[in-house]
Amino acid sequence: MPARFRGAGVLAACGGGGGGSPVSPGVPASPAFTQQPPDPVKVFEGRTATLTVAASGVPAPTFQWQVTHDRGATWANVTTGDGGTTAAYITAATTLADDTSEFRAVASNSQGSATSDWTYLEVGQMPGTPVLAVSPGDTLVALEWTPVTGVSNYNLYWSNTPGVTSANGHLVAFPAPTLTSCTYTHSGLVNGTPCCYVMAAANIYGQEGTPSPEVQATPAAGATAPFTGAAAPVTDAAAWLSGTLNVPAGATVSTWFEWGTTTTYGSQSVPVDYLSSGEAALAGTITGLASSTSYQLSKAGGSPLALATNLGSGWGMAADGKSVYWVETGVSPSIREFKLAGDAIYFFGSGGLMSLPVAGGTPSVLAAGVSAPSQAPYLMGALVTGADESGFYWLAGTSEAGTSSFEPCRMPLGGGSATPYTCQVQASGAMVVDASRIYWSEWAGNAARIVCTPK
Image 1 (spheres, one colour):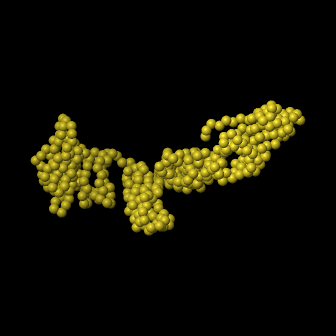
Image 2: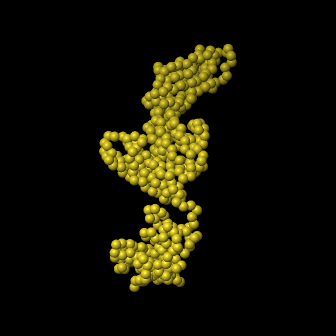
Image 3: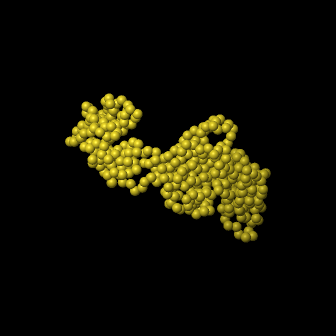
């Protein structure tokens, strides 16, 4: 608002100002204001505002409220509303055009007149009521709400006790112009302790609309907190969906979208599994939608499956569609990498190149005297299987006194003699094999390069 000037004015030479001398009972005295009108007066569009003053004087003064729309250049007695000639004036139902209108009261008696300080109206649009949704996670609660019109701030109030209000709740404010999405992750919470939330939208004057119904969520270990974002873009027959979820540490979470014309849904996307802990995003397109039909959307998160806990540092990982395999260095620190093929696991052990049934048991030696290169963890470069051939490829050699020399080797999958290749490999970082060549990366001076040799 521009600068405004306030003050009581004396309209009669014998009158007093806005805080005049005390009036002695029975002694004639001009009016003096003892209570000024509130400044400013906030009111929602379509509602009335009440302006109240008090003044002393002998005889008791009468009142007249006045309004100006030109910053005090001209004043006119109010002609709308109720109580325009009393100490408490109630305006007519306000409109946005009444925003910044200024008012004052004039108190008069036979001894003179006095004017009150000016006040003005802040007429704001009534914000809509957000619909607040919550989903519990591990030491967190994910929140999402519907955007509303006439909003400058979204005010979130929360408490660990039901019955949360703006008066007793903790406030988290979200300036609407800076929001890219109507979501918030409330983190750092205590698992097992419920959290209650309400949200109210506030207009530019800080006036809050009707708060949302209270919702409650209880953080829990392993909770996934899935949320679905707005579908966009949407065409006549398809829609792009997006959402987020929380993946607890040491867990796998299977997540999918569900949609349908009712909240019973009926259609589901292909599940996607997430292994990395923390917040993850899911997105995809659904097709086959009917034009001009409304659909309900959600994202469902399956129960997280703890694959393994309290693990030592591990090397290597493989999966066969049924199980996940890894090596714990605390159990066998000499095994740093392995390969999985069919029903067996292959690795370099103390006896040479060895195999082990995936169901467990005693390792078998495929080739004795075959040792892994000392530059771990690149022990087995590749394992290829096919209709015409299958075999192991690895780098054999030593790395001593700052120099490295490796030699590619091959051996049939079922065991037998290792066949070395007549080429030398510098310190290598990776190795792969296709149908015709062996490829590896190596250092040449201060730069890396990729080289190959025919199989």
